[in-house]
Amino acid sequence: MPRGGFAWATRRVKEAVRIPVIASNRINAPEVAEAILARGDADMVSMARPMLADAEFANKARAGDRLGINICFACNQACLDEIFDGRIAGCVVNPRACRETELVYRPAQQRKRVAVVGGGPAGLSCAAVAAERGHEVTLYEKSPALGGQFNLAQRIPGKREFGESVAYFAERARRAGVRTQLNVTASAADLAGFDEVVVATGIEPRRPSIPGIEHAKVVSYADVLSGRVAPGERVVILGAGGIGFDVALFLLDQAGRAQSDVATFEAHWGIVADAATVGGLSGTPPGRIRPAHRITMLKRSTTPFGGTLGKTTGWSLRIELARAGVQMLGGVAYRRIDDEGIHVTAEGAERCIPADTIIVCAGQEPLRPFGEARERLHLIGGAREAGELDAMRAMREGAELAARL
Image (tube, rainbow, N blue to C red; front, top):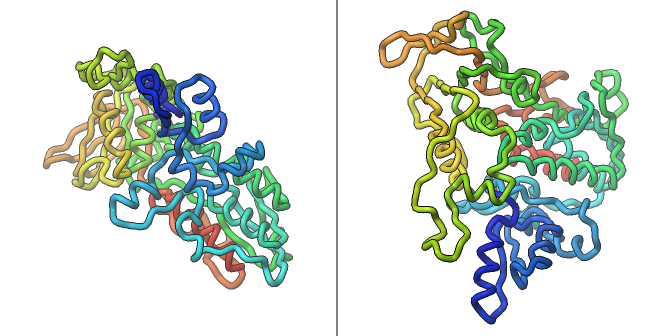
């Protein structure tokens, strides 16, 4: 939902009572809080998740250090989702949250030359902490910009603010003196003089072994999210994990207005702001939307679609895809891909699903340009274990390794 998306409701309460009223929910940056107060929507603001992301939020805001604030982007992955599963809360972008006595950043006893290869979430986390501890750190990134998979993630509606995290860690690394080398693919020769080498090169999309997988209509999710490929009208998505759902949501609304604009958000979900409407809902369930693509999602397993999505966020993604008429077919066996589309066997019968574009979201493989981990060569993040592109694990591994070096 948009930042400060319910401040209008707080204002209504404020106009009806004579006691101070506090606004909360998705107020994650100083300028958002100040705007709510300036409009008179509330007398105070309350923050919870932003304090997990950065315990020094208030001090930094007071000092005017906006660039130094680690912004919560409301993923819920490490806080609410963990709590509802009976685990200790944490924060994706702050590995020390609720673990301050376990993950301690002490000054390095011996200053080392450390190379970090890969400027995604894991590499940025590791480089910043290692430099802050006193090491001499060089960060190599083969692309023109830092961010790695976060640069793709922030194109997904509802994940636009992932860019805040990239900007924060890049600024933190700069302040700590990290020497950043963009557009540089580090070679073994480049790394020869370093005491420690951290490989945070991430992943490469997996291509399943299906006859015809090399057909021109088959593309990866990275091709679509990066804008290199414009999908046709009929789209088949292979895979129904978090990436598959993200790609489907991206195709439904690339602009992401319902997640960033309050008025669009209200219209999208049937929220009514006038005081005469009981419950604040229109009473008419939001109808189906007309997407630009006809989407079919396929997967081999028979487990429920979206079963791996976040406990507190997955329900909304399932609703979005249902409203758009996305077809979901599980328990399929892939037979071949040709000019007609993709041929599968489902429920004992073979059928062809017509497709202009087939998007592969069938997992990832670790990208390890220097081989397996060994003495002074450390693998973190996707390079160590690809999995479901777990940003929480990637940032934690980067920070934990940096604390040990």
